[in-house]
Length: 532
Image 1: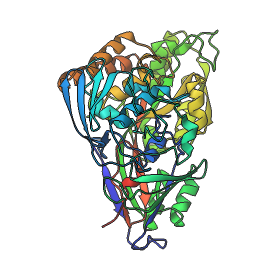
Image 2 (image 1 turned 120 degrees about the vertical axis):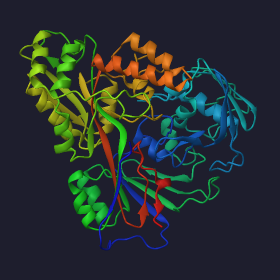
Image 3 (image 1 turned 90 degrees about the horizontal axis):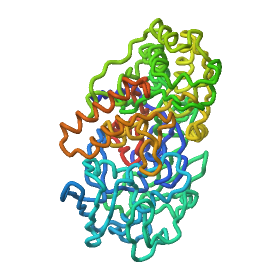
Image 4 (image 1 turned 180 degrees about the vertical axis):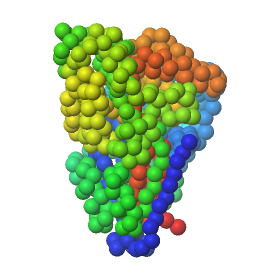
């Protein structure tokens, strides 16, 4: 399913890399919100912090799971896993990596305060963790979880010694572990003395709004990193980001605007791109007292499935993909692009504004209503332009839509505070299969179990929840695939969430560099290599 293209025009790049360059600079579209790798489950955070911190498992560019700080693992029985941990691994402060650090790290996740998108989604089902020895870890789950090795790729391993843990740490669910000491919160991780990991690079400086700098970790277990120093600069505006590349101020940028790709190629730079797993979607508040709606006599029309279907049929996805995205997007009928695990091949909703108007009338809104559409303006490819186009399409069927666009940090905070009756956002499946968007975006919100952490529409379908939970505890791949398809179909036929398109991700770089495009869209500095 992966589409990849590498284009390199003839000619020389005036601002090329020296033959033996040691420094790498990358212009990223959005800034990390925290240096705490367990604070915010956000790709802009993950892609930066994966250079500093590691997990027990890894995922390659195609999201295939492989060894990380664990070299191997096995399912002992339906609810027990044994992980063999990598020996000889050092933290950046010189201390040894052991099972104690893993237990501390998993214990800390539910203790992280004010998380906009908590990692408890991946730890809530863990009943116990014990160390058989320094490099053997036994994990017991509350129910069968065949996806555990894939999911724990998201949990960064921290240094228990650096963060002040006691000598003995006893695991208990829901943040009730013993021996944790005074657990530092997210702001403390802005200091390199706290942000200590095992990754290929060491945090040197982090200046909010300016840059994050990491330096080579010479004792890295995986070999000598390619770069002595890496600078990741948030350049949120498209024009300045392209200008920085063309001027040689940075060596590589992510998400160059589609309209500038030809110009970048003509200047002698390399373009790589690939279809991603990121779904851009519309979510709607499906509770009685949703804000930002008028002209409905106090009712929330979004609670009616006919209105939600009307919104879907009003959106011309092909036009968005072709005209706004320049062909660098694929209209979506599901929450992951087929044939990824758990997809059914469901067709994209056809553009049908006439039927949409009929559905509004059937639902009791023949004259439509007024609503506010929330969106970030610097997070996804052409996000505000897409939201404006969606607003115009909804207006044509009688839904007068005002776009409320804000920076990503403001948007996510406001979205999580349930300020928007309808909003546009994106989701990339960390595990590479359907349970990821289902349990995050549409499972019934439950802070205690960690389900639905990004379900800011508060959609709830108990029947779907039951099928999803069964799928998440089914070891047989074929049966789990069937159950995930069933769960997703239930949501989509109910229009609990509305898929728009899958992003095609683009990177531009100097020809002296090479990068394998990742389906998860991450710009991983540690995977940028000198071209051979």
